[in-house]
Length: 231
Image (cartoon, rainbow, N blue to C red; front, side, top):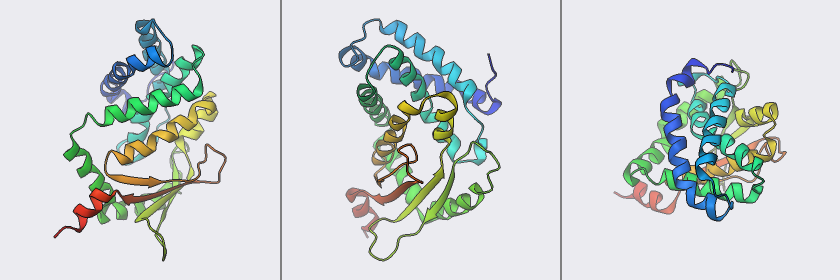
């Protein structure tokens, strides 16, 4: 079997633990919605597939790239999707199971910690970093990495800032390994990833859906806006 990149190997224990936790959270849905009964066998198949996914994950810069974290948190859903498709589970049901499982997993993090992470993401300091990384991303030092532009709001816009992804590591991965039909479920996870941190994501198009870019637009959810404006 192909080797796992040393960066991902160093995080393998945490990634596998997160996968096992997801499978625990998904168990009831796998039984009731996917109509699967031998859950222990499904678990093993998913973990075996995840090991394959780990060998397929491209290196996108490690600790120097903010996108490495997205890969490590979300790529495991590729393994879940592949296994469920082999068991003839519909794409719609796969999407429901994965999104609800991911949201439940995210909500196990204490609320104060989640909201603090959201405030950090929306902070002027992070926006400055995103601008700098957007510029560097176009150098395409790592061919499988994401390429994106930072978007400033114009007059009349109701978002704080945006990101236009012109190239997506998940799309490149899916095209290479035949996962295009399950790719939209990975895209759908973004909404809960931001909402659980107090951030509203508005996105009307994706690369996975055939658009020229993914148009992420970020603003604070009302409770976070109230807190940010409090004296």
